[in-house]
Amino acid sequence: MGIKKSLVFFILLLMSQSMAQAEEPNQGLENLSLDQALELMKKDNLELKISKFNEQIKEYEANVAKGYAYGKADVTFQAVRSNSAGNVFGFKLESREADFGDFGAEEFMNNMGACQQGDMTACNNMYNKPPDELNNPDARNHFQTKFTYMTPIYTGGKLQQYRKITKALEVMSKLDTKKLLNEKIFQTTKTFYDISLVDEYVTNLSSIISNIDRLEEIVASMREEGYAKEVDQLEVQARKAEAQSMLNQAEFNRKLAYQYLSFLINQDVTSIQTIDNTPPIPNIEKEKIQENNIDIQKAKLGSKITDMNVRLNKSSFLPEVGGFAEYSSADDKPFNEFFDKDSYTFGVQAKWNIFNGNIDKSNLEKAKVERLKVQEQVNLAKKGIYLKVKKTLTEIKSKEADIQSLEKQLEFAQKVYENYKEQYKEGVKSISDVLIKQSKELEVLLKLLTAKNARNTKVFELKSIINEGENI
Image (cartoon, rainbow, N blue to C red):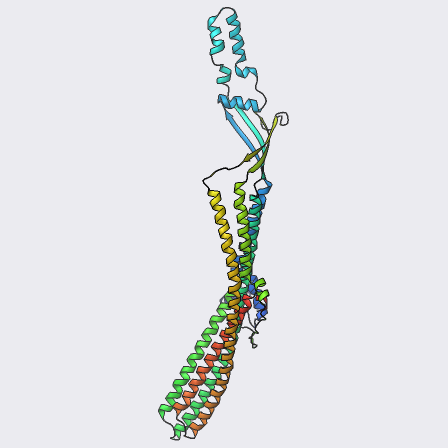
């Protein structure tokens, strides 16, 4: 009995441990570095996976276009049974078994013999009565095996241009994936810097709240001695509640940032290695921008595709030549005397469209206009991208100037607050004066965080434009 109780207790213990493990929430990644996050993002990001599937689809489409040039080979096996006069006679011909008896030779000879003996009815039947063997044959089985091969010989360059266009679209899909990768690198890196800035902001807010706590203690002490009023203490508490609300909002924003980072890398993240340094501005060279920018690369490739499309439409004015070959064998039994009853056919077909209501001409002119349009889009992309680079650089420098100014303002606001707090102790300043300076410190701190975030965003945008995603 004791053994049974011990066994039951052991089983219950195992079940409780299993249930506890099942109820325990999954632990996310902790102390994640930016390099680790980027590697996880490249491997697990869902949007990148979808884009890579699109690459594979375009690759197979290019293989399809390439395959058309090799022609098409088919093997056909046919099994039929028929008593149709035309079919039965055709089956015998294909089996190389047709004879004069199939034409009613026996009936003809019998009628001819009777006719020679003076039977006029037989003479009439000899020429006018349809042969029963030919018109009412017995049903026959027919088994045919056929090998067919058809191939294009000349298409005016149409297949060649199809291959080039589909191959170019495959390259275009890879550029799309590369652009998406740059965007995800930008978003992942920016999120790391956002979290780091929020952490810095939370630290500063916590310090301010600690200062307010000390101020609250000072006011409470002075109130006991009759040097402060209840309203002074209420004002301090109201300001503390305001600062605490800002801290709660910052914590909420940090939580959202972690959720977004988890989405980007497709794994839960609970903590990261914060980044203290400010992202540097990349070197700007106009030639390299025009060479490396993905949008410009796509525009150039699009221009090449329109050239191919013009040549493709020109091929409609040229003839098409195709070849075919066929080898077969047939009999009333499957594969019977296969090589004794085989046959072959081969030939060439040429087709040349000489008129279709000027449709081909209109399509060609349309392709030429499309090519001119895309060429202008390439020029626009080059100039537009460089203009965007210069604009982004100007915005970065403007934000850097704001940051320098706000850092000095924050330092000054902190010193003023401390000075006013001391003067309040001496009765020179009111609590309202002190809290006004406290509000100024909070205001400048929030502006500084916003300016740093805006500056970082513009730096990452600039690196993405010049295709330095891997180095963001």
